[in-house]
Length: 282
Image 1 (tube, rainbow, N blue to C red):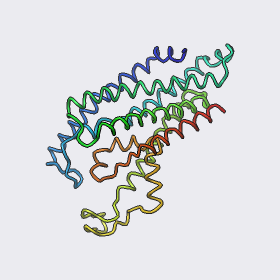
Image 2: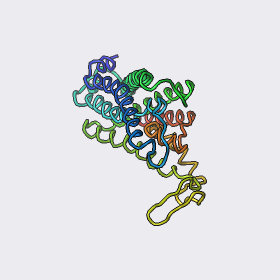
Image 3: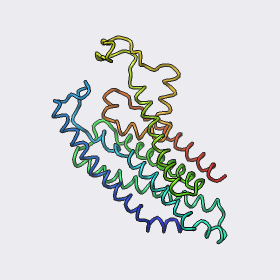
Image 4: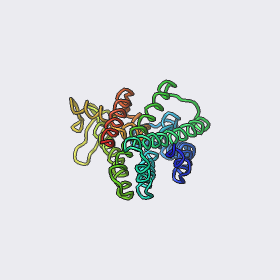
């Protein structure tokens, strides 16, 4: 209960809620309007692909990536304050076990993540629906499952950041590690996406500066076999994978590279949550 009270009084948490609403309302709709403006400037052609008018499907979860980065900062600061203020020492002196303190804090961190994401998607949904209209490609069932998957990812991130914050008592060091970790979890799937973008055969003429490849030529950059299967699996298994896919949704949808396998996303979130909790309790 004390964690919930601290959470409600924390200025950074209130700022996080406001930022979540801002990302959901302003950034989502403004990004769509900006893309629409750029499409007009380029006569609908960007990167050789014909672009459609921006739709809500491509933008509803687009800025979750930035929310996750701020979440890493918030949890490390929020938990680091316990060490800096001597709160953990006082709880231990009061008779609470390390396990009780750890699990209570982790539940509070998860609640913070759920609230931030709830504010983000609810505000973003109504703003995007008003600006862009109804879903055109994404079914209501898919939307609901994606929302649940992102709640699971926020849970996994809360468990991961909680573990680091408890292991590393120095608040500054904890912040650096948590932010560095979320960046790594985002960069790995971003790199994988770049490798997976190539089809086995070229569908458009491509000039890499040395060789001109024609339609139907075999692509030397294509990754196949077991390596591709592992890369596709990890793209959904790592917490940052779905966030990168949502961030790049318009482009990935254009080249048919969206995976978002819901069972794999839930599995990855469950594994990260479980192992982070076990490691933090040891």
